[in-house]
Length: 149
Image (tube, rainbow, N blue to C red):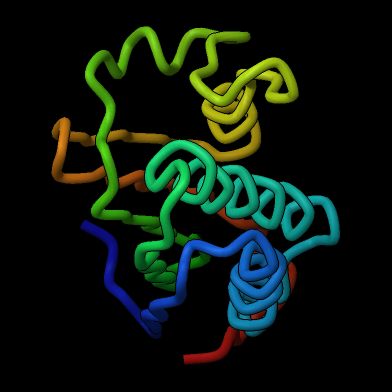
């Protein structure tokens, strides 16, 4: 296990306007590791997908709480956990299949695929009726010799 050098946790209602807040909060915090613009863009996109899944699928037509934890790991990596206490996922393997969605015709069904492609590791734990936890990790390039501690 890599050593945690800094972390934060935020809780926010599952309203669509909070998706951009979560993305910006994660990006601002991760900036202390001096990621490349591509790395930061990948992370922001993955966070956006994870939070949107909580809003659209986890809580569906209700408002609940989303909890996001961002951990900075030595020497230069980030771990992001996004959790809800919504309806949960009955079949995680099927939910991770590209183009599968429970969100209607306006949804692409690519959320987990995007997270998987933009991050180095993705794990999904879920229990029907109890919620879902998505954990993502990404190693960052080491552009600086003395990163923030």
